[in-house]
Image 1 (cartoon, one colour):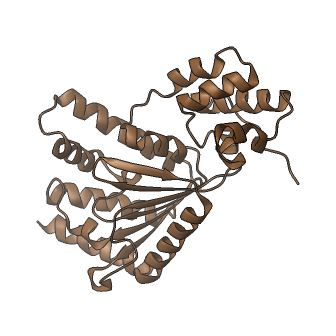
Image 2 (image 1 turned 60 degrees about the vertical axis):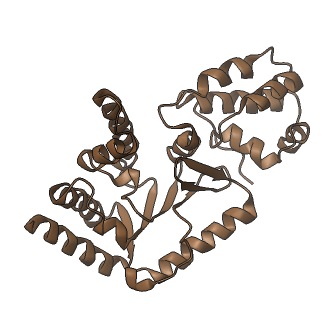
Length: 276
């Protein structure tokens, strides 16, 4: 059986912490399960910390410093690593997204963040925060566009989205903005960078009426699911829970239009917005 994938500590603060955690744990002669036991977490959770797919929380850093006799190393670096340009409820999911090998996302109302254009993102952030200064909106938009650069890589991550038809019909920013935003999605589909299906209104009730869903897989860590709502989100790693959400996504895909029919519907929406 192959050993764990080598970590690149320079890739992010979480990767640095993960690499050091693995080094210190192995130096102490502990398995992931043995380190996880006094923290009341599973061995797989320790593996996720080491792989950088989960953010180390301060409560764990304190205990790990104590168990591994690391003289406050993890507490000091945990404080620095937790700073993020993303909202607290989404920060950990955004960081996991950046190292995922596949991302599957159901979007019930808005174009997924990784597919948004500048013109589309700006009115969304302004709607969320109608009274903040323009430079604050600028920072939020730039952060979102920076996330989207994940798709600059020609193959990884694999990105598969199921868009509710409401995503196509909700006029964020007006017809010109919508035409540009949907044209961007069409371009990504046509160069075979992403897979997109549309869940039509005619599908009626479906398996994810509760809200948005994102599934992420990794090279050397268990999969994660992220569910979100108004100003809140949860990153989930319980295997049974993740499996249930994977089934939900499969059911959505079964109810959605084929990729070919979805592309035709998106292109027809682009044409309609362009005529306006």
